[in-house]
Length: 296
Image (cartoon, rainbow, N blue to C red):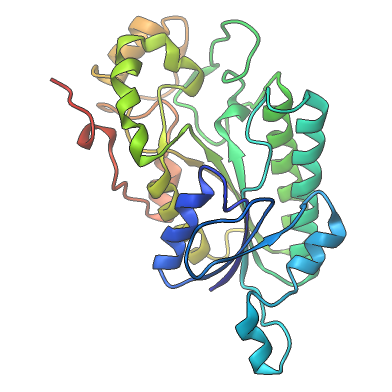
């Protein structure tokens, strides 16, 4: 597929883009910084500018396009990861405004240019605890896609709005628009942090004791590209298991005793559930944290 990928130079994108390229996809990266990935061109693009987005989604991916004499080739899909990635990088109003505006611009341009597959990066922060003021409990476990999202912060709120934007355009156009609620992204070199996570369990409450390996996120995006006809959907993009040594229900009874369990959690199942992602998309994780961290 010919894919326009926004934010491919970021923490998640710099792993997802090569993963998709290895699957044979042709990628055009839109970002404010270049991406070091052979065979992938970066177009310096401000996605908060609607005109720039429309232009970028209707351009050649590289110089070889000019050899055809037929104009820019059709884009098959857009993957939108570009964003201010968390609070406390820019003022709250800027974080909210830029994340909401850029997502609206990308989805609008894609739909109006006839692109029928759009994947956007939502976030675990929509569940309301990650950047909450004080120690907030979750409503229940597991956290699944029909959870009552109630963030307090500008970043999580922007992601909730972006999901509503995606739903509106999917209903209007009939396009497939999938929102990925991406968990705490772990790059391959970051597994050395996990012993610290185990030593201080409450430090991971804001992430619901869950994570996504950046390479497994690439697989989830690829599966979304291959899965057609679902309209608007939300998928939790996380790995299978809790970042703890105890089975999940016993761990949560110890560290989150006031939060109800809405259905049985089997074994070490992640509290931020990827059941829908596994059952609907066919996700099979390749990078369980226990493969990289000494547990005994």
